[in-house]
Image (cartoon, rainbow, N blue to C red; front, top):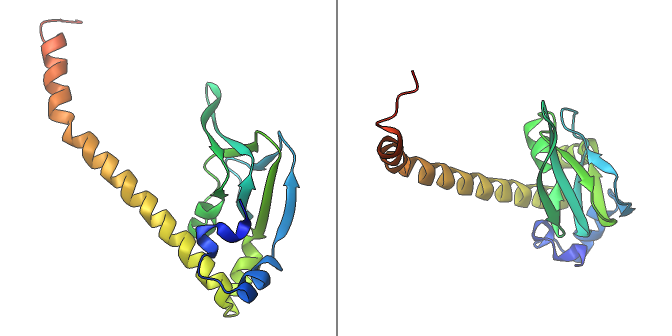
Length: 163
């Protein structure tokens, strides 16, 4: 995938895209490199055009893998918007091609009125909102099945006593 094909860049002119890229670092990140650390402040938004990353959590029972994501994907944007510490580890599973923009650089360009950064940020926020709406629907669906779950649980275990 070409970086230009990312939805976050879809409304940029060629000139705006080049100006945005001028504020980014680009290259290949080798496999087995942790690029986002759980519990640490985020520092960059990563746009991955090739490769895979592992998303893991540090728990009391050790490290737990949540998912493996393949490019194209964007990472670190939640911490940029929320200001919260990173909620998971992100480690390259393969070599990945990426561009990264530092939070401070992006903020400075936004405050400076950079239209390209404003467009990219708007698209990232829109994607986050879509994900939140999808998660909310999953919660609604889950709670919609609660009566069925309670009835089934009662039917299965209603006669048992654990006392």
